[in-house]
Length: 367
Image (tube, rainbow, N blue to C red):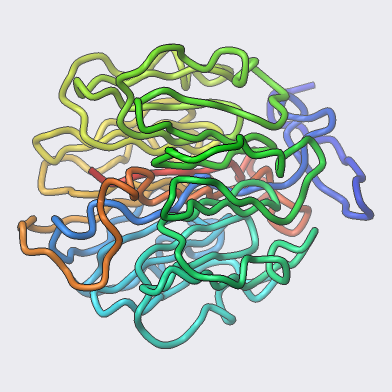
């Protein structure tokens, strides 16, 4: 078979079309999600404009919102979410399950996360709202209490971090996705295909769930000194305190081998097929697959202060930074997992573009 030929799978009465090389028993996910999108760095970054590049399969680029008042952005399958500086949410792109049209109205939101066909948002009081596709209880089983400080999304699984540093998960549990590590002291979370990562307060990384390709769980880097984490499906990314990047797991498109060297990075993001990083000078590094120009057409120049990833679409925020704290925002130390966009997933049948692979987990974070 050619690389982009597809195979149909059935699981839980759902049909999925996935790349033949990315198959067997894996199911839909986003980001890409981001995996991941949890807002971080909100207290130190001014609002900016959204820049998008790569695939325009569902008008992800064409319908990118205009304006200069955005504080966060994350991928959501073949779509995206953005957070305005007044705490309101805007969504665009594919809307098969109401993930765009049912995005919550109003203000007061402080973080966003995207799954393939669902969104999650965190309110200023620490409560969680979810909308879109409710497979495996992704929406209806979202926690109803308050006091959460960060959110992330994986396949059909949601993750949240409490103020005490403990982790909560809900939704799909086909591979132990809900078997979160016990205890507290965690500072960040990231969701992948059917796995997830958490960052401990000592800077070490823990993983759980199932890795289908690349042994991402077994290859999680040991030791401490990590500052943030992101998941690109079965590829993991982490940013060290010294500004260098660690990558592990699935490397079919050199998501691991081509991760950039140096100690100049301030943020990372990942999709199933790509990695993205933000440099200290505000420029963007991109690597991995380039079918939709998600690498070759990554923005040049500086002035970017956040990075995120969707299926095969990249997102960044461009604007000036300041140090004026915003009110009602959780402490930045609890939000190291910014812009988890988990975000794109190995696509459902309706999400297939017919031009090769067009879905992938996407995650990201801010500085």
